[in-house]
Image (tube, rainbow, N blue to C red):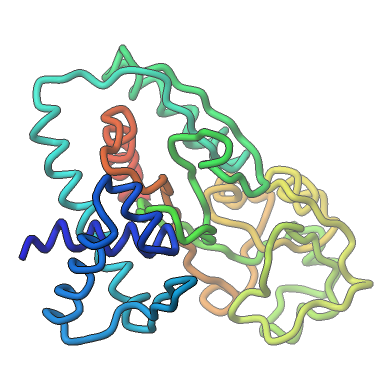
Length: 291
């Protein structure tokens, strides 16, 4: 039994929610698709799909196996592509979606090196702090901090940052000195990141609404407000490190009110990932692995 072919068939059925649609996509008969699925379930000794006359749905085991199949097919495609593309030169327009501050501070500065290395690649860097559907927008990849979004995307971690509490020396003095516990900052004014979907892991309850003096969907704007003493902020290290080094901010509750946040590259499931996209992913992993 050709396991790669069986995996491709199973993924096609799962992603197209039916045998008929999968057969059309694969260019084969419904009978072949059904037979392949049956042989696959026999080999694994588990039911992957619930079948009715109208629709097909994944079992719990099927959901787990789908992710395994996607990963295996992606790895196989990547190896095949690397062999096929030996001697080829990356080229074409590479469309990248990135958060505003990370794009400004970290991606834009390294792009000249990338483009010098791959002179036939043009770059379109689109920066926004709002969620972007990269498939719908026709992007080749996206940079995300923490959240990954759609399950239909391939996710690759390329670096880590640390979120920490920080405040200006003036605010610390005004509030009576450095806090010693999380409870101490409940009376402090804050500047919030409006796109954050959940409270930090160390925070049992959200701050009282009256104490949220300001909010923004942009990290640099939050940094300026926090430096000005409007309130404390919960800020990633790549945004505030220079301010801490310069003495404009002080870290509050180090080792207590902080969390490590992964940085991801996301790109669509594709049978053949474009060489321009692959070399940029490799470049980012190499460039930021020690961030």
